[in-house]
Image 1 (cartoon, rainbow, N blue to C red):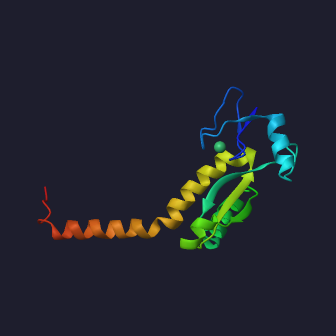
Image 2 (image 1 turned 45 degrees about the horizontal axis):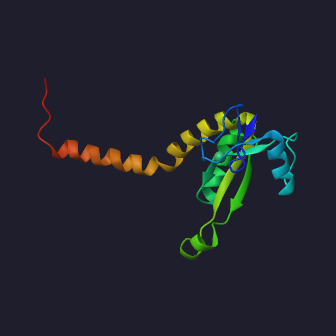
Image 3 (image 1 turned 120 degrees about the horizontal axis):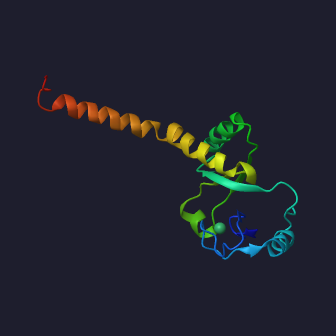
Amino acid sequence: MRYCPSCEEEYRDGVAECPECRTSTLTESEFAQRMEAAGRRPLDEPAFVIAGQADNAFQADLLAAELGAADIPVILHANRRGPLETATEPSNYVALRVPAEHLIHARELLAAAKERLFAEESEAEKAAEEEELASEGAAPRTS
Ligand SMILES: [Zn+2]
């Protein structure tokens, strides 16, 4: 197995570069050393990997509930943006971490949930606009 030190994702042997972030992958022992040096849990414990990101705690709670409903354990990890960004953009974001074996399912759930929960408003607006356009347009042809 190969590991991305940045995303902490696990990849097949032969994957030299993380497809997510383009960082060179590490062997298992290199990665384990890196994690231990950073004071992180060793590899034999269930690793929680980042499945998605929420813009704020409110969104994170909603998304965590979606994962919980699917029996996927989730760890919320609040991050503060870097010092430069903090000056202009003080908001935190929240990483959602799930056990690696649930990663693919969790990503699907999160993508669907984000669309449903956070795109609802703009979708509704779009639908209303389309309706308006349709009613403003030429009289509908009946056949
Ligand atoms: Zn990566």
